[in-house]
Image (cartoon, rainbow, N blue to C red; front, top):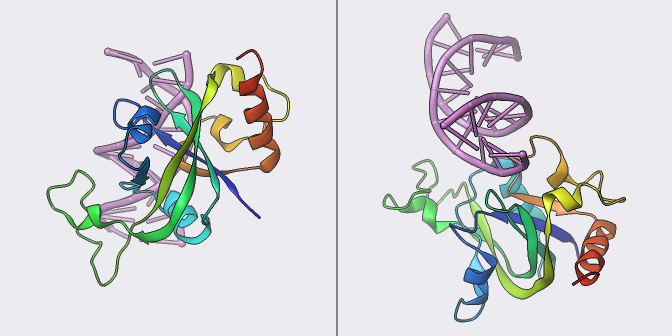
Length: 156
DNA sequence: GCCAACGTTGGC
DNA sequence: GCCAACGTTGGC
């Protein structure tokens, strides 16, 4: 039974187009430095899980879908002093941060803005729409996922 | 650019 | 273990 997720990224940093244009359309979801988000990736994201791709900050909207193609493994960027997400407390023997690999599935027929999503019955309880929500990896209900996919097909 | 909300850090 | 200070996220 597949689970459903949502990941956030600032498009200026890494966008759905960046993912689509990767050589194999796969990327490691590295750089997450929040324990709750890490726990979802480390403990719960499974092969084949579907993931909504959300652009934050610039035109905040859900723009596409990807899927988990590799389950959690240590985020090696935490070990690299040159990396922006370097964390000296994470070691090879005792890694603190984890990531999964995701693969591009599709862009939605049209992007769904935050503003629009807030008005959709059935999405009221989405973590994404909670005031002050800052989680960058979060679970999504199957119902919510279906509503979003159907909505994107309407008025495409 | 502003600022509310949130997570983390560190003194005590 | 509490909590003030601080840094970051992210909508607007």
